[in-house]
Image (cartoon, rainbow, N blue to C red; front, side, top):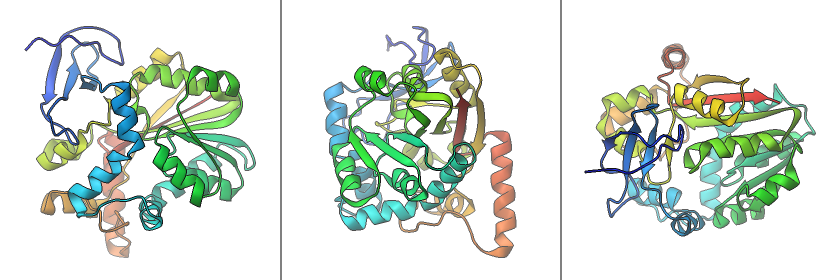
Amino acid sequence: MSIHATCPLCEIADRFEVVKETIRDDPLNRFKILRCHACGHLFLFPHPTASEDKEFYDADLQARNLMKQFSNNSAEITEAELSYWQKRKSIDTDRRMDWLANLIHVGEQIIDVGCGYGVFVDAATKRGYQAIGIDPSIIRVERAGGSLQGRFIHGDLDEGFVTEGRERFSAVTLFHVLEHIREPVVMLQKCFELVKPGGVLLIEVPNVDDELLEYNHEYRSFHYQRSHYNYFNASGLKLAFDRSGIKQFSVSGVQRYGLRNLIHWLDHRKPMLSTYEFRSNDSLLSRVEQQYCADRENALTCDTLIAHTQK
């Protein structure tokens, strides 16, 4: 089959290898995952249309399909569902708040791009930051605005928003957002424009070099999904920064999910949705847990990559 595509990262129309014929949330089997032979980047092909994306995010289908498929839950976005996602993200939220607090003083203005249900914005506001969240999903923004603290905006970083907000924020955060973006280099440029001098841009993305992808077929099937346009490893994330014109940045690894999650995938071959804890709190196992996470982070075969730059 002849594939006519352009890599969204290096923008070269070169030869491409199909690395995944089918993906999650694609009942019609329209989409594949390609690898660019020029830079090695993995990406979704073809892209959904803008109207299809709007329908997908307005209906919150990424979360609802996940809950329906793996937990037999209707996943209506009720107060109970919001509480579920808050608890599920609590460890990540605490880690991200510590990251932010080490770089930016309390009271500064920040914006969380792709804020989802608003959990991070809520936490940052309670900590004393002037926090804004923006997200393309109307249902998530409405739920966040009705229940959580902070200011929430339904929309995208269009040219008007960037012009109005240029150099306004002490911190711009994108936590598991860049992989959802058609043009990741352009998104990085827009976000960096919003950062005021001395401020920071914080990025977090899934890592396609995640070690578990190599060993577990079901995890691979779960990992590749219709909502993710891009699949970054450390070199790909560095290339995105380079092409955006941001020259000073750091990229490192975080292992979000611990041994409990690993064993669950190996034994049950599906994600853990019935518990909020992904790491063991047992004093004996915690030493093994710490070593497991440290090994994967040091080798950059962890499940997550983080990056930051200061303006």
